[in-house]
Length: 260
Image (cartoon, rainbow, N blue to C red):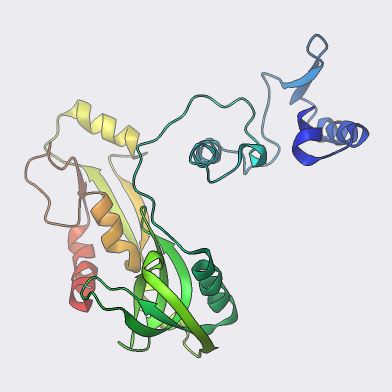
């Protein structure tokens, strides 16, 4: 029985759990006497709203990528799955552990960091408050005491952590992190109707547009992934979606550029 194998339950306990579940959701399961298994009925409705297509696909991908062990997944018979690969970012486990500890305990960490501007490592005192992912790599959002500003630091570029000390930095002072913008995406106005319709379906648009909440700290990463970080191309086939409220968002883009 899958329940006994997955959760390490005894057969009597598994039977009690199934009985309780059928009591809570009487129309969800039917017993198939020939295979001696419970199967979902045509009237199945998730008892817990966390069940979703997005969660299923995310778990399917995580299992395929080796992030989640198949034995730890709730997916039974999985369909054949693959993904477009990209190089893995090397992240030290002790680094992640130390950064998370510093966030939780409001500590500053003394790190040796490899920047893009120099071959020599740089010693920084950082007060981290959050983790972030730009779609390709993990960052820690932190106040840099050397530069006296909040910035993103790529976890893979932290070479060493040499110590902790108390921090009095307030994450609420990180205005770029606290500011949430609304990006309005729409198909390029010069696209033919059929292509516009496809984009509306792809992006879940309603009335020809979709709103995308985005922290100011993630603005450049988000626009870059969408191909909107530079001036939009006049050719609709080169850039099929547009930032409909670019005039409203442009001052925030300029603020990020000014910070360097």
